[in-house]
Amino acid sequence: MIIKRVDESVIEQFFKNDYHDRGMLKWGGFFLSDHTSAIKKMKRDKVPERQLPEQSLEKVSQSLKQAWLHKQVVHVQLKLINDGEMVSSMTGKVAGFHDEKIIFADAEDQLHSVMLEKIRNVHWPQAAVDWRNIS
Image 1 (cartoon, rainbow, N blue to C red):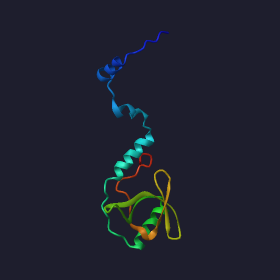
Image 2: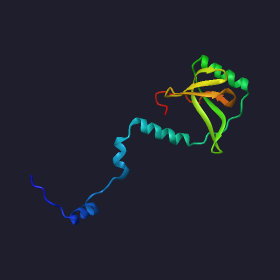
Image 3: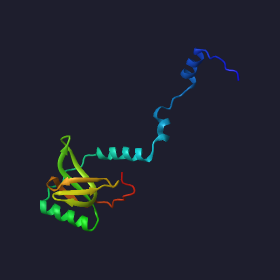
Image 4: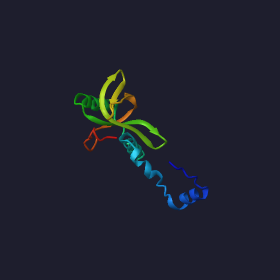
């Protein structure tokens, strides 16, 4: 095999005139479904959620009990407000409880515990939640 030495001017001309870098487009094929779902979730999470009226502790407890008994998906809004305007919330199933803590399972079956008195509002999502496509 014969290897020719290439002059630097030929290389410069190639990159200046012939080579067209596609930038980030070339990396699109390397993204996995986990990456794209995480990106979608980040975009969705940035949409501010309106603050719902605060429910009584009794109403919150009754709603959570019904959701737990019937294995229903609920949307829980917390009293905590992030960044001065973003309402903290989560959607999932009530997996259980311990003392004053409620355990939620999200779409990825990750468990989250929340103190009962920190829950502002409990309601059932408007649209049916498809657990296979939630991200």
